[in-house]
Each structure stands twice: as structure tokens, then as C-alpha cells.
Image (cartoon, rainbow, N blue to C red; front, side, top):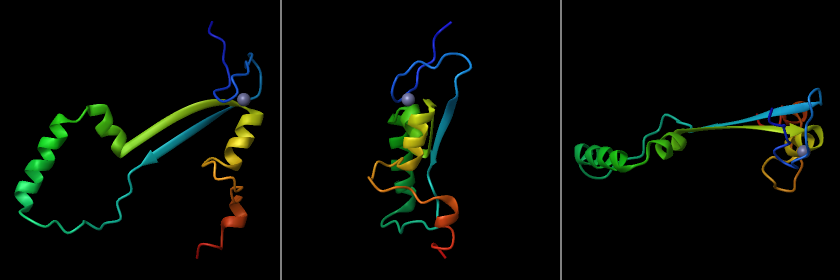
Length: 102
Ligand SMILES: [Zn+2]
């Protein structure tokens, strides 16, 4: 059987070890606003459809939604959730963040 390793530090994660699944889901947001299209809308749609036909299906799909799954040891999971965007700034914790965005 293939041995599990932490996706971040590569440490082996033997059976029964505490390990974490980290799922990252990203999908295109639609704010209900469509950019004004200058020019003939019908020819614009045709251009778009032609562009889509020449695009790789996988690339097209990933433009809309992307999902990644990582297995991590506790240390890597803790480090990741503290600063997932690697900004050097600690992430706000749930309750702290609430009330600041209203
Ligand atoms: Zn690790």
C-alpha cells in the first residue's frame, strides 16, 4: 500500500496518525453586473463561442471552478490556516473578523 505523506513537508503519515484534509474551492463570482459591450452583441457572442471552441476543456473548466485537496500533518495544517495567502499577516479568527465588515 502506498504510504501517505504530508503534502507540505513530506513527512510520512503512518496509519492512525493525526492528519488533516484541506480542501480549497475556488469559483468565479458573478455580481449580477454585465460589462457594457461596445459593438454588435451577436458578433461578440460568435467571437466568444469561437474562442471557447479553441480552448482546452480543462482550462475552460478551471476558469470557472477549481478544487484542490491536500493532506497535511498538524503542524503544516496549523501553519497553513494561519496564513493561507502567504501575506505574512496572521488570518483573522472567526469571531474577531465578525462585526468588522458591516
Ligand atoms: Zn507537514
